[in-house]
Length: 183
Image (cartoon, rainbow, N blue to C red; front, side):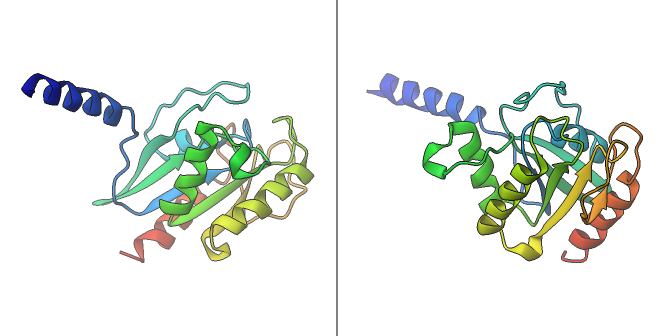
């Protein structure tokens, strides 16, 4: 009997160890289509060194990084890319991203790639943004044009480039001001 209990506990421990380490801290969530630069932005905003590649679906799970300001920490969560489809048609990875959107985010940074080097047209990205707004209150969502060194044709809250560093400092300052005034 005791051996079965230990087996159950060990199996449970292994399952729990697969979950990302998410803390109860002010939280920024990065959302958007695959390959728009969410993971690159996570790397720029935090000390995290996630796997970054130039092909879609590199991020297969939730990545977590920490922004530090004085004695404060802000958690930045990079979600796997979302696709335009109903929740019932989503795979396990997409469902994790939607769950994070619903339950973890103090603010959501929705990332556009208006250069379309991600392989997704701006119109498709706009449709996904509208869907995200049905999950998260609009006052929590801020739009970002990433890869702005290639294109700035869409009006968004911020323009950033993870290649040149343009706009990164201003985005960090905004996040700190927005989230640390709440604590």
